[in-house]
Structures are given as C-alpha cells and as structure tokens.
Length: 248
Length: 248
DNA sequence: CGAGGGTTTGAAGTGCATCAAATAGTGTGG
DNA sequence: CCACACTATTTGATGCACTTCAAACCCTCG
Image 1 (cartoon, protein in one colour):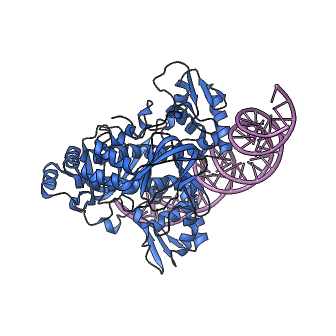
Image 2 (tube, each protein chain N blue to C red):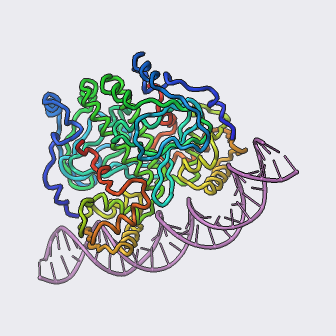
Image 3 (tube, rainbow over the protein chains, first blue to last red):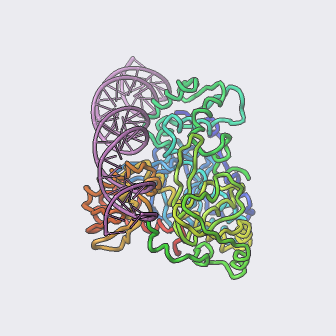
C-alpha cells in the first residue's frame, strides 16, 4: 500500500502539543539526546514489559501499539500516525512499556530519554498540566472505545471510524480515504479481516456509499451519522475526540 | 443483597491517596464546601454531559458509572466502592461529566467543588504529579479492559474478575465473595445476566470451584489462573492493577 | 507475465443475545 | 413461623453476529 499523502511531510517535535508550554532549554536537552532512525515495515520497536528508558516521536510513517497474550491472541491498542509520540506513559508505570510497538509502514522515529520528560513534569507545572490534559483526552477516547466495542456492531463501528476520518463540517458529498490497509483497520476495530470486508459491504448497502479500494465516496455524512451515531453516547460532531494532541 | 462487610465502615476523604501530598489548608477548603448526602438505590447522581461543578467522594455504598446511547443501550464504565472519588476528571473535559452516575446500593456521598481541585493542581506540583499517577493507573486498567473485552470469552472474563477480588498471595484454599449482585457483575463485565450465569457454571466445571450464592470456594487459585490468565497479556499477580488509588 | 500479498466470498461452527419460563432466595405481613 | 409477593438467578430454546477455515479473486510490482 502506498504511503498516504499526509505522511509525506516529516513532522517535527516542536509540533507536539504536549510540549507547547516548554521552553527552549527543554527542547535543547531533548535534541542533545535524540536519536533518529528509519525502520522497515514489520520491525518491532519494543515489547510489552521491556525496560522503558526512551519514548518515541513518529517523524513519518505509522506505528501499531498492541498487546499479546500467552496463547498468541493480539489486541491492538492504537495505530498512530506521524506527529504522535508513544512510550511516554511509562514515566508513571514502573519503568516498563505497557504495550508493544510495531512499524506498519516505513517509518522514521526519533527516540528521546523519558527521564528528561519526567524532570520537566516535576519542574514545570504547565508541562504537568499539559500532560494531564493529554491523558484526560486519551482517557475519553478509551472510554469511548470500550463503549463502542460493547454496544456497536461491526458495520456501525466501521461507520463511526469513517466519520472520524472525515471532515465533519462538510455538508455535501464527501470522499474518505482509509489511512492504512483494511486488515489493519479491521484489527484496529477489533474484528477479523473477513468480518471487516463483509461489514463494510453491509454499511455500503445501508448508506448508499461507494467503495473503490481504499476510497469511499458519500453523498453526505447524514446516512453514516444515522447509521452509526444512534449506537453511541456522544453527540455527532465528535471529531474533537480524535486528535490525541489537539490544540487547546 | 446485603451490604458487604467492608462497606459498613465509612470512608474518610483523608484516605484518598490522590490527596496524600496535600496540606491542611487544602482539606480545610474542601471541608468548608463539602456537602454530605445519603441516597437510595436507583438514584441518579448526574447524567453524562451535565455541567460538572462538583466531584464526589463515596463515604459508603456503591456507585455505577455508565453511558447510554440514543437507542437505549447501556455501557457500564465502572462500579466503584466506598473510598473512591468520581466526576473529578471533568477538570480537563470542558466542564461536562463524561458518564452518568447511579447509586446501586444505599450510599453516602460527599460532594466538593471541582474548582478547588483545579486550583490545587495548578498551585501544588506534587498534587499534579499525584493526579498524573492516578490517571496513568486508570489508563492501565482501561487498556486491560479493552484487551479483555476483545480477547477473553465470558468464562475467562469472570475468572479474571474473581482473581482480582481474591488475595493473590494466598497459596491454599480461597474463598471469594462477590461484592454486588450477579446482574451488576454481569454488566460490569459487559455481558447479559443469563450469559453470566451460564459462563459461571462453565468456569465452575472447568476449575472445580464451588459456587454457593455470592460465595465462591476454591482449592487454590491455580486452576483459575490457568483458565483465565492464558488469555491476558499481564503476568499473573496482577492485583496491583486493581486499586485505582493504590499506595505508591 | 507471474509471484505474492491483500481482499473478498463461501460454508460451517461457536459464542453470546434474546425471549420465555421455571426456580431459588429474600423480605413482608399475618 | 408460615404463606405470599417480589426480585434475583437459572434454565431452555432459538436466532444472529462474528469467527474460522478454505479457496478464489484482484492488485501491485518486479
């Protein structure tokens, strides 16, 4: 699969909204110990439980966070685009990564010591507050995720996922492009690839949308909203929940 | 159902581990604006989306947190015992409660203004750090919850729930008492009461445990661990994940 | 053009939900 | 202390959603 267009431009650590209240000296100490590296698809960055010394910034590419059980089942925690960081919550979690991280598209990562982050949180109250906001935002997403997995069926979950990819302000026809493989989307939504395929067809029939490969065309978002949002506790324009590091 | 024994003693706000780094003046200002009230089973404390001015401390009793969709389905977020607080995360969430709260056993609550909390977080760096730890702990729980709901089947989820109720250090025979109605446990685990009943029977047959009403007797935790923990990414003694405000 | 991965389709099985009804358990008033 | 009322729990029967295994199809890329 081709790398999506919005991935072609490298992201910069100054764009991390978590760091928006940090001064130059903080970025300097980060830069001094930052290591940049390219990875191929399939590369495992770290494993759940590994000693966590560094966190990662995604300069370009896509990263899958997941957990694996003894009997081999895999649960996808999240799939992160460029501009996101991961592995940073180990500050508070006894030094161990709470999930494994795998490269799912050719990716450039910048790793930096968690200790710098911890120090900044202890010294800079605004940074602590930013971190709290960020975690609160993440928490809302996770709460929604749990709700959706217990209440929504497969077609509705896909519809909801598509809505969050779309420009929710747009009134007329909309075009949505899946950001990564359908198999990955399926795992992200907690279902099998076959189920995804069948559920997408059901959604298509129910809403009249056109599916061509990874692109989905729709007369308007209304049908999708009607179909999916009835099985969700949030109000429709729910875009705000999406960006884990959205501007305040 | 009778109120469990450990509920008979009222909890005090000084026991909240989130507040362990706060000084007397903080507790004084809380006390000055605290309101205590008793509630009967079934009483709704607030609804998802309500304007959030106050947070609540459970002095005694049990509270169910949940969300409801347009078409009436309900997803239980958590069921909290005495000693816990809820509604406090609205500090960062545009002033609206992210879930609804309902009394499921006769309960005494103490409500206090969220603004005092927000001020303390801004002024007291240690408080901010405590809050971060608390949220990180919650996050781990939520991550585990999502994993379990996608990977574990109903009997395994029950087994895991029982394990977290038990004293995991105990080597010999163990007795576990369900903290609230089986119907509530079922909703907490995201399944129907009928499914819970059948799944518990399956678990009983698979592990040799004895079930008498709300009490469960077991020769040792081993069978339960074998049965449930194979479908979990955490290592067995996972008790530490449970107490949302565990000591550091 | 052929290889290989991603995607779709088919057939069959499993797990959980749902609806309905029986049973057990608890609290009440006589 | 017993009978009744009411609720919690269990059991039975059935249906649907999703999974699993298998195979076909399609697309991309060398």
